Length: 91
Image (tube, rainbow, N blue to C red):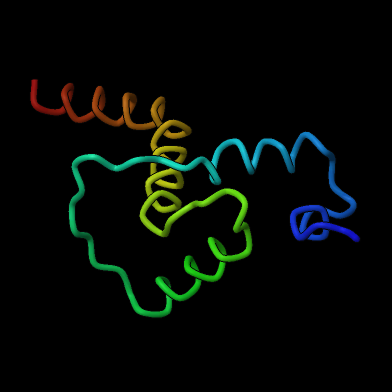
């Protein structure tokens, strides 16, 4: 029987499936938690995603933390450039 992960990534490379799981489905222990409000519909969407991967034991909070971590990692160079532009405006 085909697993859910394989069904989702059918026709795509094994690397892409592994990358997604390695980045977004990592279980994290959030030792210092902060409350953040998101819409009910977004919470529902994220809840459905996390329930699709019961073997990962991922929580809604861990998934969102992983998504934001990846987002900021990918945009680090852009933020650095914007900071430099802002800094030079005030000189």
